[in-house]
Amino acid sequence: MKDEFDPLDTKGQKLTRDKRLLEEKTSQDHEDDDLKWLMNSRRGRKVVWGILERAGVYRVSFSINALEMAFAEGRKNEGLRTLDRIHTVCPQLYAPMIKEANERRNNND
Image (cartoon, rainbow, N blue to C red):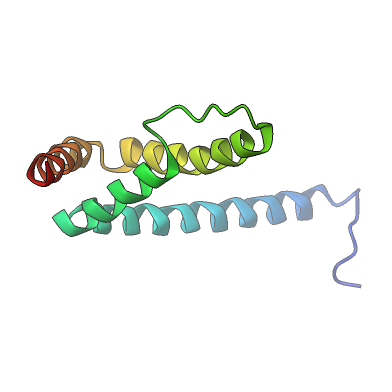
């Protein structure tokens, strides 16, 4: 069978691992390119800012209800992952995103 694991086939294991790592890197590169594309427009930065706000990245997620807090922390974790990607992939676009969010908030007040 082709899908059987052979613990003695170290060369095959290395090839399988290398193929998987390359696929993961390619997938991450595509995701990073998509984020750069989105962050390169004012409209895209507005969308990303909305995602970060809804995720609760900039607020405390404490609740006396443990399940509500666990849910909020899970949502926040995904927002923090997105924020980390922004700082890694296109850090120069973070400051304009904050500035634009502040402008929108000031115009709505």
